[in-house]
Length: 235
Image (cartoon, rainbow, N blue to C red; front, side):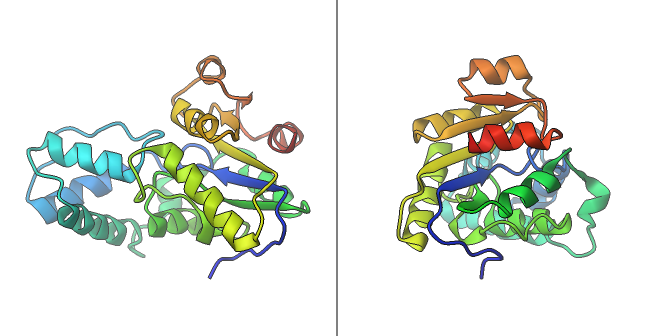
């Protein structure tokens, strides 16, 4: 079950996770290295870029680059191993990373705002997405049931469309406005492809100028200024 229930959403706010809400840089490569060795008996030699991409795109490229056919069966086995590694209770994610500036306050303020429903559009697998956010206490304001996750498609706009579809079905009404928040041009492009508002934060590998040039409706250095973040998200 989801942690949050609302009715008649005016705003559907869809968050990216990595380098938008939390910084767990290096973890994905570490988990993939171990999973690839366990599932395919292959030593990781080259890691595809992660930011803004979905798990299906990353996994497919990774296997192909190492001479392994990315069959659905193998991808499923690799994902199960990745999930086991990422959610291992012995691996304290709080020791690996941190919550980015202002995130907790913005999530809380949005949760207190009438008509706002918050969920995810993330390249992560569902169980990993929940675990990453739960580790930092960021899960309570998000409806995980209506998220768009990286297992769905290699194309990020399809994740946004799926989240909107699920939210509309759950609440028996399409949201009046959809807002997508992320740190890469991929996040911005996915929002624009679905006629959503794109809010970009320069907390990842892309600077303010690059994010603005990608077409974002609003660009913030981070979420540290709560008022500025809420104005960008809610208009």
